[in-house]
Image 1 (spheres, rainbow, N blue to C red):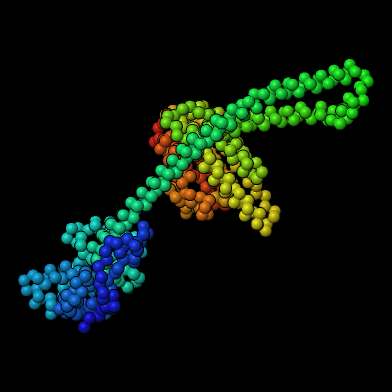
Image 2: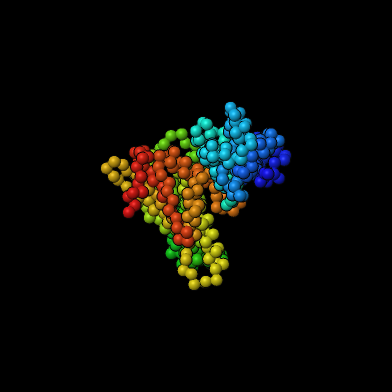
Length: 460
C-alpha cells in the first residue's frame, strides 16, 4: 500500500509565469512556490509508483520513506528510464522501491524552505548536466519534506529576474527625475538669486553713503547747538519731540545693524548662487569653506536656536571640483545631522531624567593630508544625535533606503551624495556611527584624482 499524503495531488494545475508574477516578490522563498506533497514507502512495489505517476502527469517524482522517515527521492524521469531498460519492468515493477533506490544511489538536492528563490536556482543550475532536471527536495521543517519541480523553480527565477529589472528601471527613473528636479531647482534658484542680487547690491553699496550722511547730519546739528546759544521755541519743542539725545545714540547703531544685515543678505545670495551650480559640466577651483558656509547660511534658521555649531577649519587649498554638487552633498549631510539632533532633543525633552547634560552639537572639521604618493582634502560632519544602528549601517547608501518616517525622507539623499563623491570626484564617503553616541560622515577628496588610495588608514 502507498504510505502517501495525496491531498495536494489534485488538482495539479500548471503554474504559469503570469500566476507567479502576481504572487512573487524579490524576497520570495521556496515556501512561496507550489510544492508536491507525495510520499511513498520504499516497501511498496514499483507498480504503485508507476500508477501514481500515470494518474498525475505533473508529479515530478516521489519522496521515499521508510517507516515514515525520509530516506530519499526518485524522479519521474529516472524511474521511467529504469523501467524502460531491458528487463526493467520485470525487475522494478514488482519489487519494492527500495531495490530501485539502492540501485540508483542518487543523493537528492535538498534545500530549506526559507532559501530565496534566486539562490536556490543558482545552486540548482550548478549541478552536473545529468542531474540538472532532477526535482529538488524542500525541507519545510524537521522530518517534513516536499518536492519541487525544477522547471517551476526556473520559471519563478525568471519572474524574480523580471521583477528585479522592473525595480532597477523604477529606481533609474526615480533617480533621473530627482536629478532633473535638482537641476531645475538649481536653475530656478540661480534665477531668483540673480534677481535678488541687483537690489541687494544697491542696498549694500549705498549703506556706506547712508552711514556717512547720517554722521554729517549729526555733526551739523552739533554745530547748530554750538552757534545758537538760545534756540527758538519751535526748535526747542522739536528737540524735545524727537528726543535728540536718544537719536544721537541710536542712529549710528541702527545704521550699523543695517550694514551688517545687508552684508549678510549679500552672503546669502552668494550662497544661493553657489548652491545653484548643480548642472556644472566641468570642474573648477572652489573654496570648500565658502561652500560649507554658504550651506550653513541656508540652514541657519534650523541651527541658530537649538544647536551648537562647532567649526574647526584647516588650511585648505582651492579644490578642483563641481562646487554646486558638493554643496548638495553638504546640504544632505548637514540636513540629516540637524534632523538627528532635533529628533534626539525631542526624545530628551520627553525623558523623565531632567538632569541630562546632553546638548545638541553639530561639528564640522576640515584638514589637508599630504603624502608622498597623494594628497587629499578631508571634510568631517559630525553630530551627537542618536546614531545609526549597526544592523542598518551597511544599507545607508542604498537608493530608496531611509530611516525617516513616511513623507520626511526619500532615501535618495545619501545615495546621490555617495554617487557625487565617489563617481564624480573619485573620492570616498565614509560613515562612522555608534548608536546612542552620534554619527560622523567623512568626505575624502583626492587632489590628484587617484581613487585607489584609502586615506582612512591615516586616521590613527
